[in-house]
Amino acid sequence: MSLPTYYIPHGGGPCFFMDDPQGVWTGMAAFLRGVPAALPARPKAILMVSGHWETDGFAFSGAERPELIFDYYGFPPHTYQLRYDAPGAPDLAARAASLLGAQGFAARIDPQRGWDHGVFVPLKVAFPDADIPVVEMSLDRRLDPALHLAAGRALAPLRDEGVLILCSGMSFHNMRAYGDPRATAPSHAFDRWLTESVQLDGAARAKELERWSEAPSGRFAHPREEHLLPLMVAAGASENSGARIYGADVLNTALSAFRFD
Image (cartoon, rainbow, N blue to C red; front, top):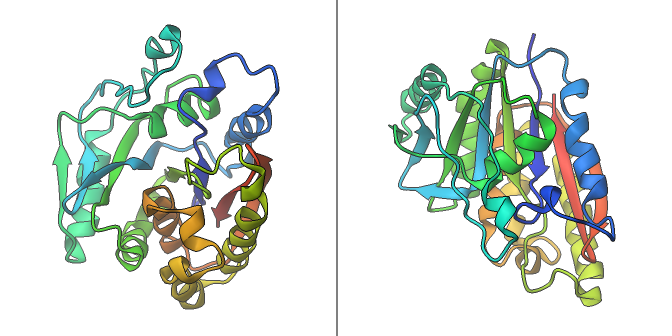
């Protein structure tokens, strides 16, 4: 049975594990908690693509028990004591690197790399039992959308092997615009374009996503695109049209999640 791929928001730092009296993150947390029940089968392992790891070529975490990387700053002390003790999956790391290598991509295994908050924060919400093996995949630091779409295509066989490809970023990621009411209209313009593009299939979708920076408010939504590029991997791993499965205004900006069957 083939598993879907996802592009999900990972929120702001450790937001789901802090007091949230205004309920800013409540809807996003509920969405993440609902991911497992929407799957056709329990994953044997999770390949997590994070917008917080960039390398020359692609890399995969290869440790059996990766440590956590607390790559957020200025949050309450308890958020630096969070745990997510899921096992690593060295065999999956090797398999994924092999699939990329067979298609001519530079790919390596990093035996020391831990999991950054783009990995452990959403996983701690969605899969709190931490009993499914996880591998993190980096972005190629050139941030070429076509390259990441092609990498997704190379990794597609994993979907038939019980691996959930879960790609973590934020569909709007302009840090200076969060919370500014002036960002609402342009963020929705980009979100509409992104949703329409994702709903295409195969080559037509790839053509649109490759030109994301030309989209309405594209560069406003992503002054730097590292939080959008995980979407390319998720989309590339499926030829079917995608669906917007979560959408909300968070901090005055439109944020979405997408699924590809």
